[in-house]
Length: 312
Image (tube, rainbow, N blue to C red; front, side):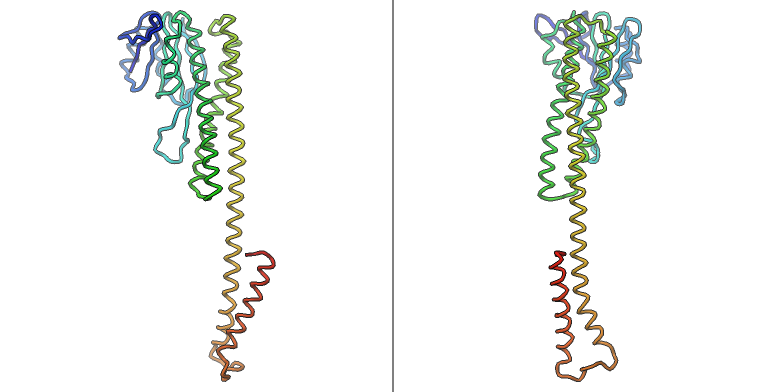
């Protein structure tokens, strides 16, 4: 689906087709016919539009004729039905700068473009570079918001682990760990992209726009550092819980072994007295009580020894 937006005197107007100064937003569901028409009408290489469909497309920029193409990664919730998948993944946003329009192509709905749409009435269509930088800003804000959500979820699952030690809570932490791997990789790629844009002046930024880009680099570096810190803390936490679980399992096995040993003593004594051979005291009135008392005494001694060694 293709949407056309125009800023008229501070108001967002949705158009039926592309006009000069319009923002063209392409969102799912995609149709090949729409890609072909958009490519012909706006003189955009069809490869630029198709590249956006690849969820693993890396952050980069390139130029063909007078059309500029930029890919930046942004976070989004993972709608996979597989319970072992990450809670959040990163997807590409493709930004295409033509002669008179700015085109964005999204493989999934994402919060960055929605935020940009909400602030589109404040944008100046003749300042396409600033519009691109604003999209970058919304992407950075999106990362920061999702990182805060991840931190809250991590604290929640850690608290549940303290109380229950269920495997499901460990699986939830594992899914968060996968999300952070996506974030760290994409943040690093985005940071390299912005650094290259700053050095090469691909967008031909003026002084104010260059300063704005430098500020975005600082914010992006902060988000990257946050993701790395959360990942390191989560890794240490999962290792600690794994050690605790292993220690608890060893303690349980030690107790079970001790109980098995204690129970085996009466069995050993009774089996000795139950043999079909002549044994001392078998004709005595107390023949039944003798093995019982011997078994109890040995069991009590072994229990006292295990308790002294703190095996219970």
